[in-house]
Structure formats: C-alpha cells, structure tokens
Image (tube, rainbow, N blue to C red):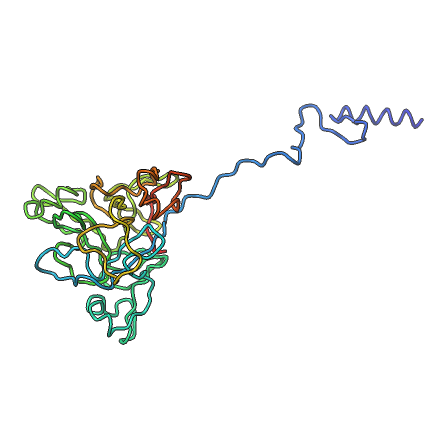
Length: 333
C-alpha cells in the first residue's frame, strides 16, 4: 500500500514538471531555467556617470602689474584668476578660497577688489571659488548655487606671448585693463580689432562691419565639445545646466616652462606657463597650447608636463591624459 502511494506521488511530480532525484530535491525540468550557481560572475553594471564639473586649483594674482584702463596692453594683472592643472601652488599665488589678507600689506589688491568678497576693513577676503565657478555679473561677490559673480575679460591685443587674443579670464575687479574687453556681448568694429576678429570671427554675433564678444553676463563658461557620456556643447552655444553657461574652448599650456611653487603671488605678465588652463573664444588652439579634451600624450614627448600632472586626469604607464573639460564646468578645487 505504501509502495503504491509513493509511486503515485512520483508520477504526480513528473506530471507537474519536477523530477525527484536521488537526493530528494525537486529540480526544475521542462525548460524551466535553473538558478545560477553561487559562484557565477556578477552581471555587468554601468560605471559611475560622467560628472559635468571638474575641479582644478583656482589661483589669484595677489601681486603683479596693476590694471590700468589706458596705455599699453596690460597682459596678466593683479586680481586675475588663473586655473592650474597641477596640484601644487604656482608662483606663490594663493587659491581663491575666501582667505583673509591684511589690508596694510595688500593695498594694491585692496584698490582692485575692495571688500567685494568679504572682509572687515583691516582684512580683505579673496573670492571663494571652492566648489564654485565664476559667472559674469555686475554685483561682484554675489553667490548662487555653485557660482560666484566676477568680471569676465577677453584679451583683445596682438601679442607674441600671452595672453593671446581670444583668451578669457575671470577678474576680481570692475576696471577693464588696457588690452582687454569685458565679455558683455558688445559689438566691436572689425578694422579696429583685426587681431581678435581673426581669432573669433562672428561666432558671437556681428554684421558686415562688426563682430560680437562673448556675452557672459549671468553665465559661466562650459567647455565646448563632446565628451563621452555628456551632451555636446557648441562654441558660443548656451546650456541651462549644471549652471547657465556659454560654450568656450578650454586650453592647457603644454610647452612653456614649469612654474615655481613659490613666488610673490604674481603671474608672468606676458607669457604662459606649463599647466596653465584658460578659456578661449577661438576654435583652434595656438602653438604651445592644446585643447582640454582628455587626449592621451606620450610621457617621453612631454616629460615636463608629465612630471607636473602625471596621470591625475587619466592614462597609465608612459601615457597620460590632459584634463577633459568638454561639456564640463570648471570649479575651484
């Protein structure tokens, strides 16, 4: 009787799609997929999404040539912000991190930026770009989500070194130094500004006799180009996020001498320096500069730059990557 009952149960299991193995464990049959073994490799999962921001040291010139609105082209002056792809200081210039400096020993800087970024009269504060990016604005020092209002300037004068026409910097003051113009979308006459026109053309507007400057009032700079995983940004185009921004190219100096870590806090007035990163309103990088597009370079061909930045931005062994600022906002580290 018991034997017949067991045989009947076995037939029932087979009809339901199970087979009773010797161990008494029900094993799926009839095409029912078995569970993967415990040591099966994990399923592929996507890596972290590309981030639309890249942090670099933002250094402020606390010494150097005083910006004057007339006379010869000023070059890089006191109060300008310079981005650096290295991880150390350059020329003794401090990071723009809202640090307080005594007014009595920084009177030229006080004359340029005043207390726009904070201070108490006996001390002045540097702009705070830690985790922030500059936006063009009339009210210097006003902060927003990840932004700080500063003055954007574009170099207009023809020079043999730097700044070259079309280079764009953030500036802590309101004065427009000679050899620069405010990035406010103004129209300039072509015959009076041939050097700049040859670089930027009418990318930012114009007509038969004029051309437009980048209009950065209320906008940050975002790198032009298309990085993997990020929306493409056109030169001169606008994007609404991560903050409202206009597309410009970012360049890195790959050929000049490496900067000393120490110094007076002044940048070279009329030349670039290795690892310097700067926004550029032109389309093609000038000699000695390369696009910040993540390109891999051979360490043997660029030994000084490799020693300066290593594989911070990618690469391995004897190849290293440039920073990739395409589709990205540059913020202070």
